[in-house]
Image (cartoon, rainbow, N blue to C red; front, side):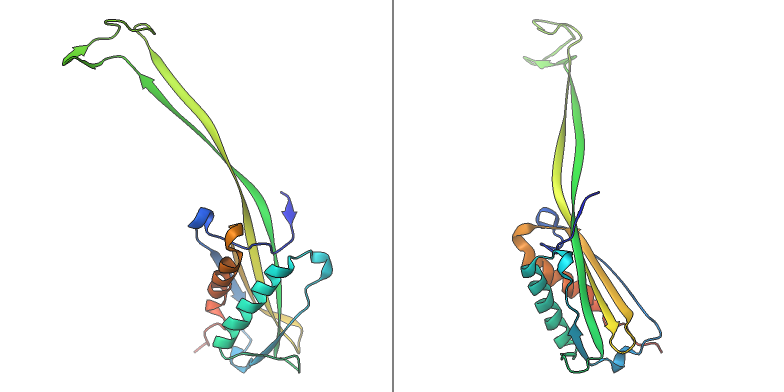
Length: 190
């Protein structure tokens, strides 16, 4: 399994119509209501991430967090945001086949028995066709981490993955981030 670390194109819509698989987890001991500000952790150079995709992700996350009342600041933020991701090439192989049995059929309004008239293949004519189709595609994964800035500990992680459609990178990023952050912050305990 060959992994290419790069957030190039992220996720989904398998040939235009697939779903985004989203999961998340969080620290139940964290009071998310106290978190009001955030800042971005730098993306490591050795990660070889696509610059444009990183921009798309950051813009989408900033937009979603703003709608939730969070504000970005580099002056003593409550939490830090990190993004990770990658893509993986996959091949789907499908074998198909069907058979055709010419043992009798209607001709000129009468039933023609096996081998009657001019049957070039003989009385036991049987045809079988088969083939194999292969489809290459890429699965993209986006991970968004929220880290408590004071404690330097992970407090929330969301993961989205699906088939990458290279022509729809920004739409896929926006949809993935929207779906990922639907559950952030988690509902307060009662």
